[in-house]
Every structure is written in C-alpha cells, then in structure tokens.
Length: 454
Image: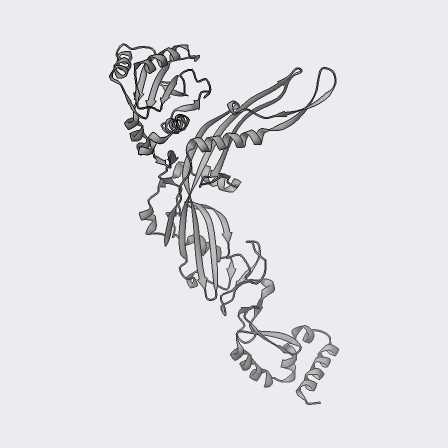
C-alpha cells in the first residue's frame, strides 16, 4: 500500500472519509477545503448513549509535530457542538515524540478534549481490517459479502427446471443439466437525507424533507441506478449476506467471476449527492409582493444532502444455458437465495417469432428441440405428436396441409393415404368433411378427379 504516500492532500482527506465511514462513525463529512480552520473531517460517534463530535486533522506529510496537535486542541474548544468533543490527527507519515507526549498528557489528565493520533502504519492496518484497499492511488471499496447466489434448500438448477414446467410436451426429467455461471457484480445501497428550505421576500416557497434509499450498480465507470425490482431484491436481503468464497461457489457453478467496485466510497458519495440534487431540482411558481408572478428554480445545495450510509455488497448474476438439440436456451437472473429477479428468459420465447413472456403458451418440438408458440406448433400427422413449423416437412392431402417430422414419415403416410377408402381420405380435411353434404360430395369428387378415377 505504498501508493498511500502518492496521494495529494485532498485525496488523502477523501481516503480518510472512506475509512471513518467504514469504521462506523456517523455523519462523516469534510469541512470547507478553502478555509478548514484546522478541521479537515468532522464526524460523530455515540458513546454510552450520548453523541460526541470528533474533529479530525489530516496531514499528508512525513512528520507531524506538537504544534499541529496543539492547534487542533484549540480548534476543538471553539467548535460549536452541543455535547462532548474530542480530536484526532491522522497522517501518512509519523508523529514526533513531543507530539505523542502532548497527546498522551491530554489523555492522562482527563482533558475534556482528548486527541487520538493515527500514523501511516495505523491507517494501513485499519484499511486492511475493514476491507479497503489502495488501488491506483486510492482506497477502492473491497467487499467480501454477497447475497446468496442460489437457494441452499434446493438444487442450483431449480430455477431452470421451474421455468421449463410451463413448456408443454417436455418433462423435467428429460432436461439435460444446464451450464451454470455466476458473476458477482458489485452494488452499493445508498441512504441519504435531503433537507432544504427555499425562501424569497414573500417567505418560504418550497421545502424538501426526504430520506432516499436506492441501489446502484457499482462497476467501473459511471454508476447506474438499479431497477426498482433489483433494488428491492438487494435491500430486502442485506441482512442475509454470506462470505464471498469463490472456491466454494466454484464447486457449485461451472464458471465464477468476481468484479471490482472500481471507485472509492467518497466517489460514490459524490455521485449520489449530484444525483439527488438533480432529482430534487424543481421550478416553483409564486406571486411576489408586487403581485407579479415569478418562477424560481429550487435545487438543494451539497450541504443540504447528507449521505447516511453507503453499503457495498455483491449481487450474484446467474446465467444458466440449456442445450436442447439444435437450440440453446439462456435463463439469466439476479439471485438472493430463493428470491430472484429475471433478466433474460430465453425459455419463454418462440424461436420462430417475437412472441415471448410467461403468459403465452409454448410447446417443445422433440424433432428439432425448438420451443415454439401456438402459431408455430402443429401436430405431426403420422405420430400425432407436436412438431414446429420450422423443421416440419409439409404436403397437401385432401386439400389440407399436413406436417411431418421428416421425409420418411411423409413417405409412410403417402402409402397409408393411398390405401385409404374415399370417405377416410375425405376425413383428412375435417373442416370440409364436417360441413354440408354438398361440400363433402364436392370433396369426394375432387379426390376422384385427382386420383384419375373420373
């Protein structure tokens, strides 16, 4: 983790904000960078039921002397907070002996504003313990918790077997074992409060008092807000995570892949704040004291938005593919134990047209392995079993098209048809045969003509 020393002062403050938030401190925020008055990070903790403020001085330097600690002690005393306060100095380097002695003396004398010192070795050790790693000069989120990629009470292939139950003419016992792959995709669950008041000369024209919770896909690049059903899957199962053990899951799935989060918690926080600013921005129409109508754009400032938590977790994306003769059927979903959100359903889809969805009827064709809708499923004349229009061989008998598995079946029916009495041949076109006597007579005459009898 030597690249910690390569960070700029501002980047180091970002890193420490991530570290403190992961350590469980609350309301972690940075002071104004242009005039921090000795306070780079401000946060809170609850001790014995009482909330206490912590003023943090971040020093990206080789050594930190006693004057820095003394200055922070004075800053703590003047910091406006209704409750106990303490301080902390963190550095990428080390503390001089006088600095350490001064902090020790405050502690020994039960000073109301004690100061804790953390040097570069302490920071690296803490980062390792809480699952943060330095990557390309930053502490990128690392996470070892995932939602369950399958239901431990059922076979891993159970979702595919369940999906095939809706397909007619195929039994679960006839299905081959699907190829299964899982990708552990990083997501973050963000909880934030937005509190803003917008006033003009006529008074308050708009208020925002909102708690937002949303889930974002957190791979490299711009985060993307997850769909509502995926977000619900994540938030409702955050309490039931398991260790991400790729070796263990490799015994269950054919392929296992783990993605990186790619960014720091501070970067996700900044993105979340910007998103909420845009989300809450609105134009308000009001009437001024002069009875003139005005339009005002109300957009919360960054200080109006407080990110309460950023909870990283892996979301398993499972892809199972089933090979049935000439066709491959993918079934892809996000998993959380027995719960799942389907992404791609290649089982409930006709291979011959755009018909798809679980509300349609589909039939399996044993001749070629196709799953087809009712418009593309026929009955094979010789065997009386389903066959799809994509593979069937056709020929017209008694003015009606018949469907066959192959040329062999067709030839067998030709021979059978030749030996049929006329009334049976007529019955091959049931629509006509079931109609009027005149229509039936016309059909028989037509058959006689075709047969060269008259």
